[in-house]
Amino acid sequence: GAAGEFRIGAEYSNDTRVLALNVSLEEEDGGLVATALGLPDTPSVALTLRGEAPIDDYAADLTIATDGVERIAGMFGFVTVEGEGQDVQLDVAGDVTALIETEYAEFFGPDTRLALQGSRGADGSISLRELLVQSRALDLTGSAAIGADGWPEALSLQGRIAAQDGGAVTLPVAGGETQVMGVTLDLGFDAASGDAWTGDFEIDGLTRPGLTIPTLTLSG
Image (cartoon, rainbow, N blue to C red):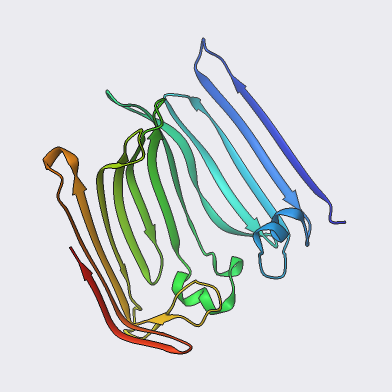
């Protein structure tokens, strides 16, 4: 019953190698997108993606708003990596607290960022050159190379979950009842250097209904 409109305009020429893209989505309260994503109170949604530039170094501006307020903004595009082909890039940030349940607001805070750059080869291999996820309680960085057979060829992942005030952090998992005092992760592997991998994973003060684990440590 909610009114909505989706528009897309795209143009590309092999002669100029210029890609022009104009995408917009607008929905009233209770629309399909807000309902499908389970946004609290199913607000009105507006999304735009606009850019015009050579495909070898392309960037489009991306914005997402709900209830008439911009929540997320950033860029989506392509970049040519010398000798490696072309990567997809995404770098967006904003205040997502209006898009999630209230109990998870402290985990994300008013400034959450997601950045990635990577590509998929014709043989199915995946190169993730950069991964960055940051919020008030989370800091995660990494990179990976996955072969065509699905096995990692290289992997680097470092992460931390901790509250700025040193208190407990409510994790964004179902129920909103799982808390930790802190989490650290450090994982590494490079097939070019051998078949050895290293990993350290530690959780402090894990609590949820019926379960308390003061410390959990895995290393290898």
